[in-house]
Length: 203
Image 1: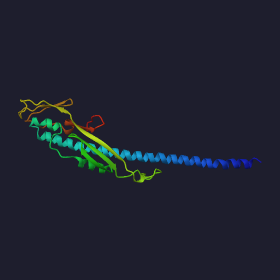
Image 2 (image 1 turned 90 degrees about the horizontal axis):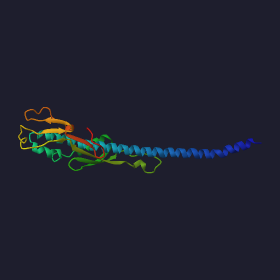
Image 3 (image 1 turned 180 degrees about the vertical axis):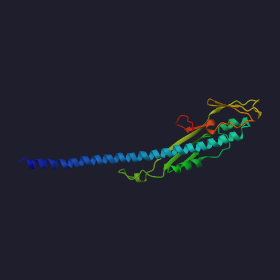
Image 4 (image 1 turned 135 degrees about the horizontal axis):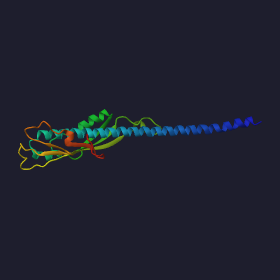
């Protein structure tokens, strides 16, 4: 007489089981959607960081070239280290790096020694249970700055081409003479490049 009751209990539990499984599945899909959105944002931030750094590094190299070209004119050094030298915009380099990261960017100089980049992913978050994500892209920004590493003293004596100022760059010193310019600091010795919200690096 009890067997029909057992079948009845099982029948009543089955809808509850389906509801629980459906809820868990919906929760898993929601977590997946959040993960998709997070990954897309990370892609945008990576593209923005790389693009801003690329532009700043390109400008750093131009400034270093300007210093080498004007090494016999110590009076022009300070302007070069402050970014007041005739260099061209390096936003093209930011666009190039963004394309490699499957993104597009808007870029503009940030003062004399920096670049701000806004990157948007070319791909969207993708289909998910959240409506509209199939067309939603991620946008992130980054700013990279250039900082001079070196100090020097220009005096009446070393304004003469034969007596160039000593260049001290974060613990390393170059005693320069016009007759021997074979051992010159590299761009990374002269300037540091880093993201604005990051500590100084050795890029």
